[in-house]
Amino acid sequence: MSRVLIIGAGGVATVTVKKCARLPEHFNEIYLASRTVSKCEALQKEVGADRVKGVFAVDADDAKQVEALINDVKPDLVVNLALPYQDLPIMDACLATGVDYLDTANYEPKDEAKFEYSWQWAYQERFQEKGIMALLGSGFDPGVTNVYTAYAAKHYFDEIHYLDIVDCNGGDHGQAFATNFNPEINIREITQRGRFWENGEWKETDPLSVREDLHYQNIGERASYLMFHEELESLVKHFPSLKRARFWMTFGDAYLNHLRVLEGIGMTSIEPVEFQGQKIVPLEFLKAVLPNPGSLAEGYTGMTCIGTYITGIKDGKEKTIFIYNNCDHAKCNDEVGAQAVSYTTGVPAMIGAALMLNGTWKKSGVWNMEQFDPDPFMDMLNEHGLPWHVMECDESPFKK
Image (cartoon, rainbow, N blue to C red; front, side, top):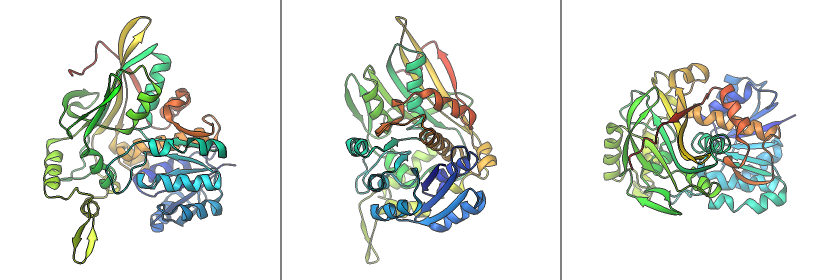
């Protein structure tokens, strides 16, 4: 008997819940909680009360509320698909109750546009002493890209030296401006300074100031911009042979023009302002008026291409490979009623949870994805909708 509590009821959670519901051999009982219980009820009705056994309202900012919920449900695993701000309260609740934990994105404080693993890595000894496990970043990037790197290191290289993670959304949702996941988190991430690892140190760039025009399989050439992404932090720690590690994401001109205007008039700020006698955060207001990412699925065309270019040494010779997945927006909508960005995060969350519950990935402490055997995860990607491909390259496509 395995029992899972999923916290969150947005686009990613919708995918994860539906995928979990199809695998009773891993997920005997599913429970769902969110600040807005009506979202949980709608998802339960769609999936069936025989699979989602119960729904609950919870404020995931409040560790005591989460702790009380865990004591009520008594799950074997808590899957955190809420906001990154809520990682630590949920981890605190798991510590208090002795229950395993999984998330898809690392913690960031609400009052500062900064994200790093230090806050969660600090739980290592306490989770070990309690005999419970935390799996961090079981999404696509972070998540699958970490596992791709571990798979390449295991099967293709004696030593890896250069890593470039690339994330292209080649789809069209028909909106003038919309983000493919939570607008608040997405815009905070994009407007930060870029950061990459080179020769043993972190180097910074101005936001979206470094561009490469890259070719993406089954999509074509797209403008790609250097950003910081959390998986870089764990990968350079766990693969110390890396001489350089970078992350790139595609943006169209229209998207960037909208973003620059919004930034220029202060709408992307996280500093509260006075409005009609109360304090509001401009970015939170912007989130309220932008399209809900979960509403984009209908009519979304095109596909994503996310993967890792890795260069290293095998048998004394340098080689480069590209491990990647293409995910079709329309097919995702047909299958689970979600667009591909939600799908590519929701499926890996389910896979990570399944591997924890069946004991394949299991050890006390706080861990990143690349610290486990990649093969079972890679097998499940092929089985559950995210097939991957390995392409051997004559050389790296990057000019810089």
